[in-house]
Length: 596
Ligand code: ADA
Image (tube, rainbow, N blue to C red):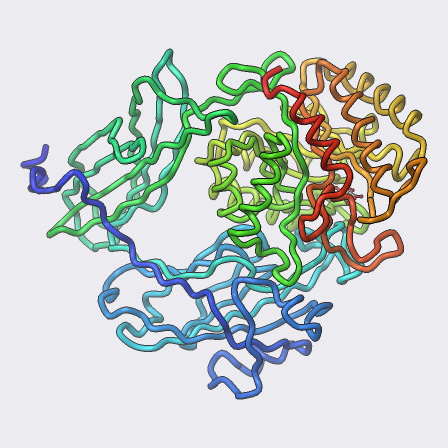
């Protein structure tokens, strides 16, 4: 094989890998809001930057960087210059965005590259034909975060959102340029299994050839445990001109260290394809060897039944808005670990890559939720083709981004949709098809607040419910709340005895510093007592396999009579100061085993 492909196998040293070009575009950009939407009409993207444009930091939403922008919803323009390295000439160059809320249109050097809709999933555009290499270039991004009944999530204004968190706008995650050779690895998918003491790693590597001619290549798959190679596969292959082919291979890791909360062991896969005179591309992805299954009313991690104890969270912090920096994430994960937490849901949208990188490292069991919240209230038709198309695309983008993560054990396809309506089944069916098409290995669910009226519970692998007895109903009456919760859970279990149940939301607002004896709503004491009451019921039900407190920390919301500038159901304040509940939660979580 090697000879025929004419590739000098022996010459490629074991350590060799090909570095992709990367240019991070974080920093201060020129910025201008455009409430009358004049920019596109007047072709601002073709003009020199007028002096009166403001400066704004990327990545971070515009809202809390200046009070002039706090409540601004609409169109706004970003622009900056960047130097494109001369040695990128002839390569593939993509302009990548990790997250822009909500709709983005992009121009480079007056060339229109494309547009994307959706605030929480990554997208990229090919830019090499627009770039001037070895020179300065200019990018314009028009961002529009106008909410409508057909945006996902939907709404009608900053204070009329169909969801209960602040509607930030802007480029709130990393933006960068990525360059590869014209023969490159477009995707690498991993599925892991366990065979006795060994780990089974199935890899699909997608190789794209845009060199314009047939290439003899060398494909090298290596699995690293730290710096040590623990499994390897090398082979020669021919890549036809203008082709995209997927190579599927199985590697065995002997005496594998399984990924789990108590030992979140990570391996690294490196896929390298080399061709021509020392040309080539490499991609690396961390992964864990683990299995996740739903069987007999249990969620099995590596064959053992697990109990999820944790939180619904939000990406929210003063001034930074949705852009949780590494330091804040480190703080949060340290606090969650210290509390004995082993799980969280990415309520109500896919969180940043960095957020989930830490989940992989800390061994947290994550329910990855799509940005499909608020599909109730003013949404006329849930099975509207336009909504279905967007839900499918956002689900695909989210699953494609996080499919190789050990921490992601399940997909939540919706939060609190109008699932008491028959038409929701059609929408759920589409979203489930899309999720399973992109990743058949993980169970799917959605967070229901319709409980016994719900029409779609038979369609999920795991039942997830949000409950607020003792807060929105049975106010101040925790005994009644406890009874009602217990009865409702039993009735739901009766309807679906083979499906495990997770209580994905329960909690109470507590204004930090408000204390009442006896406990009453809005006080820290009431929050702590409600959490304990719920936990007692949850732990009394063998078929309940998890509980997530709403919420880890207070977070910003729109203006409404039911909210005091923040949703205060956090057990921590917005700046991560503990409320009384923290002590109680530590007691409850540390006395609840992960394996049940
Ligand atoms: C809902 C919703 C959350 C939050 C919560 C609350 O269940 O899913 O986003 O709004 O209620 O605090 O009322």
